[in-house]
Figure 1: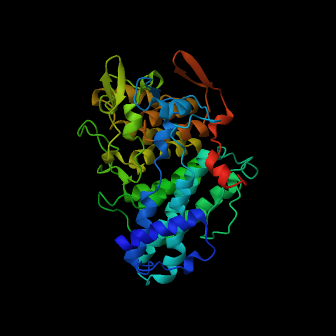
Figure 2: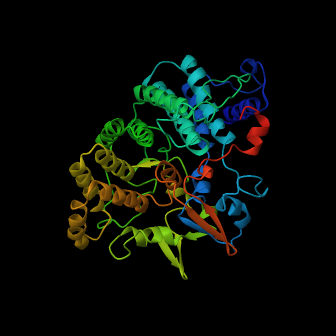
Figure 3: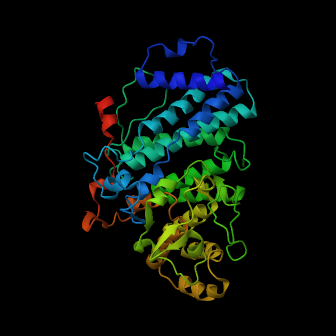
Length: 438
């Protein structure tokens, strides 16, 4: 295993600096991957280097207040104020090359592993995971550095380069938002054919499975406003795992990697540095019923006159996909398909696990009487409540109203206006320096 890890490091170095014939080089005393186990080690590295960008972009949204007295204040102040041009050198960088590093390992497994590994279900699972990881990385990239998906403009909106093969001479030219989404869906389809494990035990559930690829497909189609396709994927995923934590019976955080709700737990979506340098915004606190919503006391802890996050900052909170997201996406798809009664039934079936039982009669009456417009508004609030601090909010703002947000530092207001171009990140300076095509 140590030799494989050394080889992976050498391979990645070649990827970064370039070499015409790197695949023909076999470092003396090192092992070129040949077997299933060796290629599994390569893909494990691909998972490991997948960046934890969702913590960083949380500061761009409306969930947090940056603590000016925190040790890491300088790391995040320019992110918090959307100062993307010439940020302080100490600013935590947004991931870019790290995402392509993860794709690189996936491509290595797809290209070489497919040739060298003997046929088996385990091989299919591994190659399927590689396609899925590549799809997930490209999906996150396009939602960071490309405009939000709009069917009317997606073919002309420029996004990010696609990395589909190991070719050190390849020129990485950004392609359209539509091209990226099309490739993501192609990789998802390939992964669906190959993946054959429905669930990994906790500790290995950072890997893609049959359930996880359907959850990713559901998220992708939701972002594209393909409600029928999203609903198909959601129902297929829920057929494999529809377990949900009932907070009336089991008052535990549902985003733990060991939770029955967990579908895939790859990312630390709210890391300790961000948690320790922030408090919860009034904007987020205001969407909770502090008396009847059982999540409030689990998600947040009082800290003087403020609140701190209680649902992140530790490795046990790794969470990429979970059942609650699927149920909320299902209600959204049903509502957009004009099946309002079904959408209300789905949402009510979910919220009974999140509110005091004594409050459900009142909540049921309220939701049952809502118009389609009012229901979608409430559904998005429920999504915000449930998935707070799990890395969804920035992407949700991008795909919805791109509202005005105000952040304050030392008494000075910084404003992200409605539909601000800064809802899309510029390519990092280092990436532009290394690739003039960006």
